[in-house]
Length: 218
Length: 218
DNA sequence: CCTCTCATTGAATGGGTATTCAATCAATAT
DNA sequence: ATATTGATTGAATACCCATTCAATGAGAGG
Image (tube, rainbow over all chains, first blue to last red; front, side, top):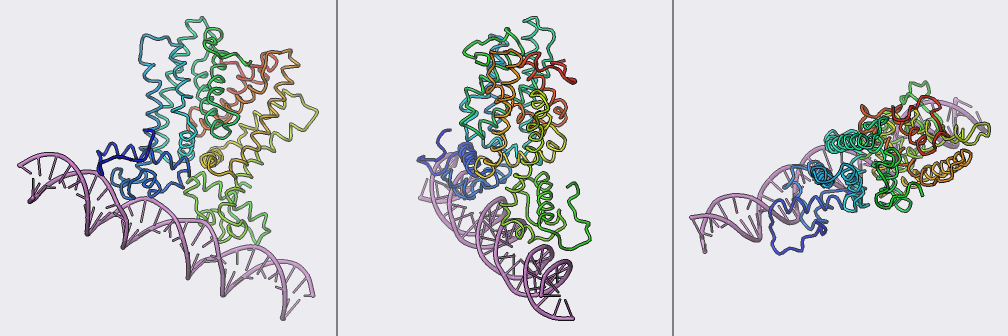
């Protein structure tokens, strides 16, 4: 997962291994050179494999790119889905889980952020990319709305539009990501996470308190 | 400015006219096909000019792209700068002006959003793009912080970290943009603007009230 | 061992595009 | 009119890259 070069012993390996190698190499290349600057031979070199393998294991460069995005999306989704499905933790904790997944080091490393935005940049004229990312976005947004609704109910808050808050949350997530990518010195993961938690504390009131260390605009 | 084709009478035109034509055509092409899919010959055709002109008026394709981004940035910046410099309007109105510039139809049409994010996608490995967009981002963010500070002061709010709020605001801006681009059905300009104003109303309290029609999470 | 299957390689192919530039054209100055 | 200057054109050039594929290699099953 971490290393992308095969220091392996065997010359041949099961397709799944090669596919992962190639996808990881693709992530590295896109982060380094952008999508337009990512060539199959660069991917091959990065993966320590030959030029033609990408077209063998994937049908085309396009398919490899889509698969790469799908992988990133799945990795992210899995992270909050695990908690969302449990019934032994509170809704507040589930919401916390979504937020912290968004800013988990594995998810929003500089490298992966670069790749996400490379895809976003192409998403508007590529239905495939758009549908991959919209799938997990919608899912998360709906879950957030439900959680917020239920948290507000328990807290006795009536005047709340959970849907609207969930939409704002989506905006905060993406905006924080972009800022972290563009201005890493000004925007760190920790600050971004606290920013979002502060916002939730603000709209959900004391119900959604400063559980850990999120001083409201200190 | 609107039309990109020259239905003009003269065959030759002053460089500035041609440069604008080419830049507009570039915006159209990028919005349609992304940066990687934008070729000089497509730009020429869109502008109604010949293939070689782009390289004559700009030094290279790269320079044309940078100039295009610079234009977009300047157009956006001018919109709030005008109000920011006046001393006959309140700080609250200046903040309003920044927000409404962000969501002005001329600034965040689908077409231009597509172009912005095309550039963001490349920004991480292109110092030129990054520095163009960071320049106006920083400027706006600092102005916002000042305004928020001063608004809070006048409103007697002490517990406020204007810097932090300005950063969150940046996040909301960018996040709203991305969502408007990706999910235009779910995120409209008006809703995004209200979202941001609601947030400001929330952190700045009644000081920054529902001036127009921004019901706090109705 | 011997096949047979499948993974792997990288040279060759074909299509595409930024860039160059010599030729052409229009306006302005002389 | 003519010359001069600068804009405009598009064919030619040179490069880059996705994709193909014939040849090769390694392992599995007999």
